[in-house]
Length: 131
Image 1 (spheres, rainbow, N blue to C red):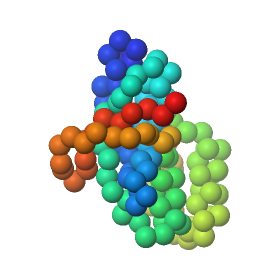
Image 2: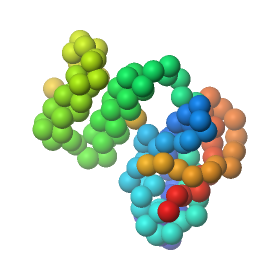
Image 3: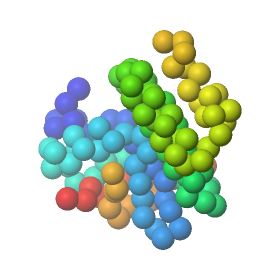
């Protein structure tokens, strides 16, 4: 299905930080494709940031990115190793990392201003794409 002719059909997921900025955590490729074809807005599910520190926020971002990437296109063992190393560099214990990488053994762009939609646990919005 073409984003150029149909737009983004599946909403991307994002987090709204305390400073008001919104960061895409799942749907980077859809966001970039929409930007490339000149789409003015895309559907986005925005949830509030639930972390009190950067270390755990970054850990959850890496885990979400791995899970999202593995769903769309399997990551290589080297990419998984790089993600594992990145989490270790954050000071996360291997025992905390391992459950999030268990699927490996079996083998979460910045959006612009948003207009709000329905209220759920997440907020459904359309965000302007930054150029």
